[in-house]
Amino acid sequence: MQVAATVPHNSRKCCNGICSSDTIVIQAKDYKYFSITLCCVSSEEFVNYATQTSQGTKMPRANWDVLIKYQIMIPPSPLLEQFNEFIQNIVNRIHNLIFKNRNLRQTRDLLLPKLISGEIDVEHLEITAEDIAA
Image 1: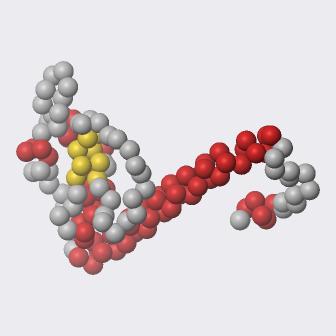
Image 2: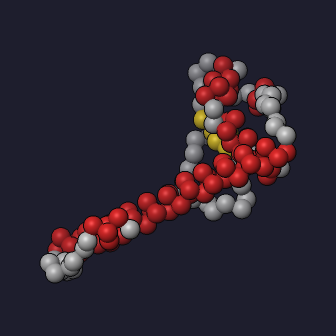
Image 3: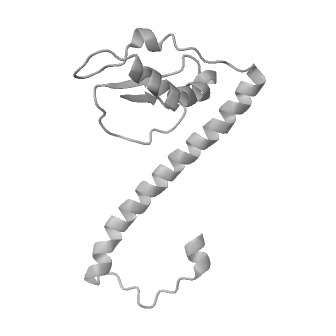
C-alpha cells in the first residue's frame, strides 16, 4: 500500500516517473492544510489504518470512502501557520537536495569518461580542502 501527499502548486516539481496504480494521491483542499496533510498521510498510523481498512484479498486496495473519514486535529491558525512554515522549509530543502544530487550525478556522468580517457587533464589542478567543503 502506497500513500503519497502531493507537493503544493508553488513548489518545484522534483521527480518524473511512473507510480503503480495502487498509489493514493492526497492533496489538501486548501494550501494552509498542506503540512498537516503531508505529515498525517506520511505517518505510520495513517498507513496502517489504510492497510487495515483495505479491501480485497489478492490485491488489497485502500478504501477511499473510509480514508476520507480519517480524523485529524487541526491546530489554531497561528500554530498551523508556524507549522506550515517549518514543514515547507523541510520540503524545500528536500527538493533542493534532490536537484543538487541530480546535478552532481549528471556532472559525474559527463566528466568521468573524459577523466578516464585522459581527455581532461587534472594533473596540475590544485584543490584545497576549503574548495571541497564549499
